[in-house]
Image (tube, rainbow, N blue to C red; front, side, top):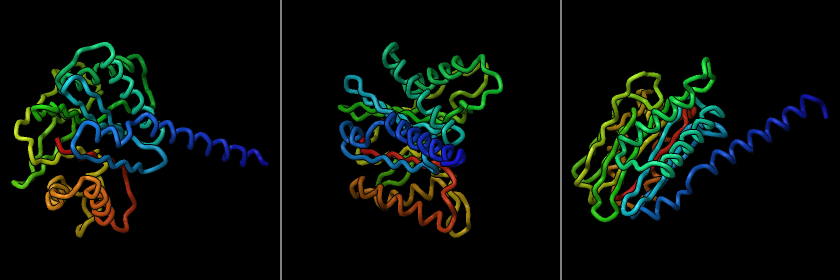
Length: 258
């Protein structure tokens, strides 16, 4: 076997190992069903590994769900996924933080502290993050977003709960905090967190990016069917929207009923 062939084989092994590590660090979709009455996770990386991740944690009657999109793609973005997951584990093990906005601020400070002395680093440490806190008894919810929104879909329409327009990890000296939004009317609603890549898909009749309103209208039409079927239909919808265009970004979508 030639040296070039050896290199290709070794590279393929590294790629396969990275892919296994990426998927192994994420929770299984079934865990979502342990905490919510119905839900799904759609995870479609652009390549072998992705830059999107999610996190689940339960404390007493509260369930925390986070989705994060690390800037960049491939191995480096996948590496940042593990860094963010480790930061969340550190928070759970050593700190008492209740509000989604406080969790975002914790992540921001952890990432900045980890990379503060590293100049010209190849990694882009920024991430778009959305965090939901759901009380399993009262069904009250709180949401905070760092450059990410939450979609609420019910018979009355589609509501976009806005996050702050600043990413986690941005190199700013002062970060006053992230706002936590309280949602009290959550019954008979479906909720969706979407990674940045969903809204980067180009296609449709005018060859443009899909909007939150367009996706929300589609999801509202399907709101009364089970989430597993909504997942399949959403995959078909996004594929049809893209059409002949190639998938240009990692895609992750999480849907759930509180």
